[in-house]
Length: 219
Image 1 (cartoon, rainbow, N blue to C red):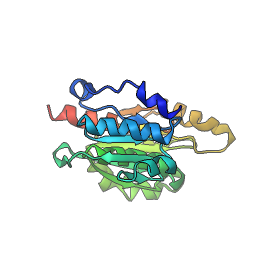
Image 2 (cartoon, helix red, strand yellow):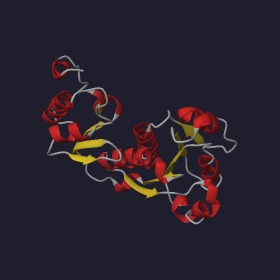
Image 3 (tube, one colour):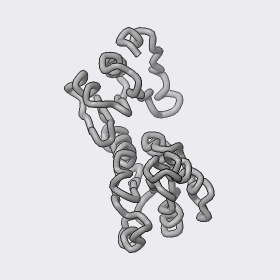
Image 4 (cartoon, one colour):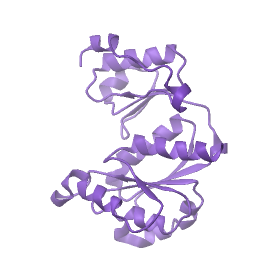
C-alpha cells in the first residue's frame, strides 16, 4: 500500500457511536506514512483511543509521539482514561513464545482503559504453574487464555474459574501444529464449558470481546 492510499481510506468516524469502540488501524501491509496519516486523522476527529495493530519499527518512527510496544507490535497514539469500574481481565499465556499475542491483548485493553493482569508462562507442561495462580485467575471478571501447541490451557482455566474464558490459539508449535490450526481445533473442541474462541494470533480481537463482556455486565 502506498502513502497515497491513506487519501482513499474511508475511516469510520461514527463507529464508536454504534458499537462503543472507534475504528482501529491494521498496520500490516500499510506503509508507515499511510498509518501515520490515518492515525492523525483519527486524532483530529476526536477518536479515543487511537491505535494501530501489527506495526513495525518503521511505523513507530513515523509516529514518534505515540507509544510503541515492539513485542505486541502495537502503536497507541491516544489512550482512554482508566475504567476500573468495568472489572479486571486476566490474560494468561501458556509460554513466553505466546507473549506477542498476549501483549497485543493487554496493550489493547490498556488503550481502552480496561484494567488487566498478565499471567505468563503457565502452560500445562508444568500444571503446578497455573494452579499456583488460581487466586489471580479466580478474581478476574473475564479471562483471556493464549496458547499454542495443543492449546490445553483454556480447558484447565475454564475448570478453575466462574467467569467467561476467551481462548486465543497461537501459531506457536512444531510442524503438526499447522501454524495454529491444531490449537484452534483444540480450543473449539474443549470439554470445559464457558469458553469462546477467536482466530489464530488475534489478541486484539480477544481484548475487544472481553471489553464487550465487561460493558454488557454494567448495563
